[in-house]
Image (cartoon, rainbow, N blue to C red; front, side, top):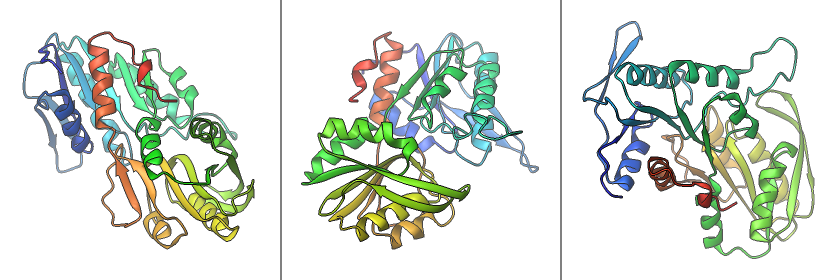
Length: 312
């Protein structure tokens, strides 16, 4: 990319690994940002170079803990007070997205609250990927560029050249996403119907469709405790599947997830690097979305369409 002195890229603490790759793809240096931490856990943000009149891109996924979200909010506020021309939040993983509606009485809608916090802080644009629910885009009153991990996952699946391929959704809610993959790859779709005992705990699961003798790929947006996806893999393998793989956009992988994946019937589980993965699990593979976000940033800077970036 040609040098453009009118934009700068900065990163919070937790997503610096991805911001560095984005800057490498853009051909620009990562901006100098200092985060000062106090002994009580409070922290402050300061830009170590002038950003007056610049288009600022702040790279930070808002996965737990909440310090990552608070860092992003302070980065936005500091940029606004330092007279940045525009402030663009690049959020590869948008946390709290599972709280997108009132599914029972007296609960919070966390996704809307986070959207409001970002807006009040002063963000002008949000660039994110594979929101848990598409309607979260409507929680914002600023432009939202919603990217899809299929841009890197589909080419990887095609490179495997699997015969008798079947795409599966681990639950009915993810059927639209899985169906999009199935249509693009020209293969059948299988659904899993599950009931939950409580959050993160699957009570029962049934497979809707034929997996016998098939190479199955389960598609999801995120894997948290891996209870659903490993249970689905085990049931499919027991039902005669030749192999079972899984692909998901966001590698949350909390608690017992790594052990569950390692002990399951899954051949491998493929994620993007929207969230860092530091645990050891031989079955986990991460594909980088740095080039995807770098190209989107380039197009935003040059006022070009980003729709051509969508494979599906």
